[in-house]
Amino acid sequence: MSKIRVMHLLKSNRYSGAENVVCQIIESTRNQSNDYEMIYVSPKGPIEGILEDKDINFFGLNNFTQKEIGRAIDLLNPDIIHAHDFSASVRVSKYNRKIISHLHNNPTWFSKLDYRTLIYTFSIHRFKGIIGVSRSIQNEYIFKNKLNKKFLVLPNVVDKTKVLNLANEESYSSDLLFVGRLSREKDPLFFLQIVKKLVESNPNIQAIMVGDGALLNECEEYIVSNSLFNNVKMVGFEQNPYKYMSKTKILIMTSVYEGFGLVAIEAMLLGKPVVCRPVGGLVDILDNETGAFCTTIDEFVFTITQLLANSSDIKLRETKAVERAQRYCDISSFQQTLDTLYKEILGLG
Image (cartoon, rainbow, N blue to C red; front, side, top):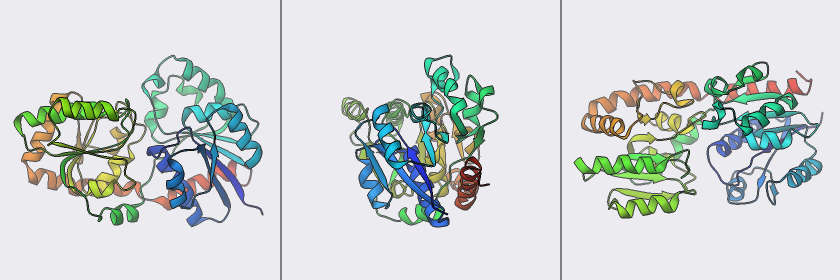
């Protein structure tokens, strides 16, 4: 039997959360099954170097237009189109193909009557399956009753061996760590406001920010204008954020929304407590023994101050964090679930 060709379609040409998950899907499938040929399709850009390092087949789009997507489908002739997030899912819904819509996020408009939720809902009948990385995606969708029959919760998984190995590389130590795209949804400026408030009582606080994005200049300007250059180090995008996770005391997540929260699990696996907003999948991943939920700047500052002042409390949370993270490390089960879904869609189950 010829290999099943799966086209993974993404809108972004940069490496972040969803892109990391797609790479993991392709790598784990390649390691555990010879039944598939998987191709990563997105606009050309920085992602190309990362995919080359991972030896992942890439088809570059000149732009994310209907014409370019159609060209890729015509040339690749995939058995399954695995579309990641809303834009990609809606764009491919016009084609008479077997389509999976994989939702990695639940943005704020997701729970509202919005042209985007309407367009996605009108596209649902074209999807053979819908994957959500957490139950919150289904629960928060305004038309959630439309998802029920096709919706599958498939939490992301962490490659434990990879994380632990890469964590041993040399890096800077810190009290606080931010890892993520410098974008509105990750709210890096809120993180900097927290640091500013902490510095008022602890001028020696050290924070590191790992990531790049549209808010880079705003973050740099905030650091300069508030004289935080001795407290905050921005290291840009890193393929290996784990070396910073292993040498920090607390991971801070200020996301306005978070479909899953893979960064939290990676940090927990390295024994780091996570302090975050109670959004999306983070509510399921964390509990009061592995971190803390905060909403306001004052709540973040109080919680962080208490943790940094109590090393035994951090030590206890480290142990609990590692234990809880283990449930998200079963790559074999993750890949088997996808394999079953693919083959059911093709009538091979």
